[in-house]
Length: 372
Image (cartoon, rainbow, N blue to C red; front, side, top):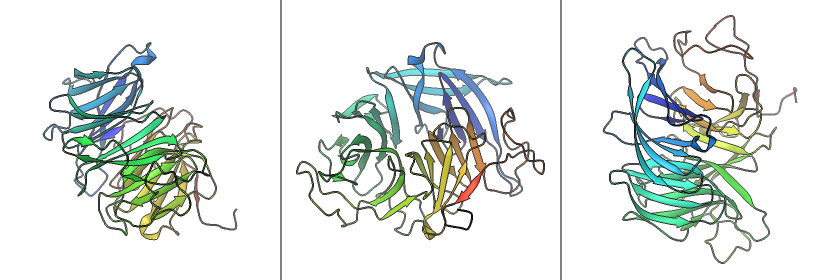
């Protein structure tokens, strides 16, 4: 799933779905309409499943995405809607061909950062399709974050290892070969862990809107926020091969669950929220970082799927997410009607009689109460 100013694109199997945002004219929630769908491969060939997707700059048209596939292919896709149909006409330009799953894609300005499951990292100039720098992490890798607007441009990489979150600087289109910062555990007595989700911090965070603040989702069920400007370091013996680990400026968790965090996103209507998708039971957790110790709550996605929440995106007053079974949206804004979103099958869902546009979900607070 990826989002731009005017569209939401969702990939499922070999198919791509494009949804276009409407315009709010009465202070209500902007509509989301299916613009069209297309297939990028044979649905019977699982190696052609899309494993990652990201919008890239195309001069404001919002029609160009980069897709990564299970077979290691990376392709640039230009999507055009076919008039009076729900079909998309894709123009496909193959970027590269590897032998490993494309686990994560991240884009900033005219550059693409790609990460394979085995730890192959590539920084590519999208305009020329030229790879300017590459790394081999040699470990199971999950997620990436490219930030070129920081005073010192960097990439952040989430892996399964004793140092699961590392930062490499980017200078003149080249990534540093060794980490310039390690975020989290590097102590020899710590077991391995993993980081599955990365995001820039909310713009209204107490630490300011600096792009040097990273939000991360961890295997131990915690969301940790790191400020690359902070002097705080972890205490205790460290591995000599890597820098002393940076200490988080904030750590958040659902006290009723220790399930891993698979996805994170920041923003919301006040630009102060963090959302995290868990590894089981389709749970999404929310925190307002202005009141971090008082604001946490969690909700089960519609249908109570047993699946992880593989992706979450906060956009204004709503959150888009996806489980194994379906994409979904939590809309906290006014004026949501049955015409705001595409109609879906209600099988397995409990529709609200007071507002047929919505469905019942189970929500709980992170604060102790008499109910627990």
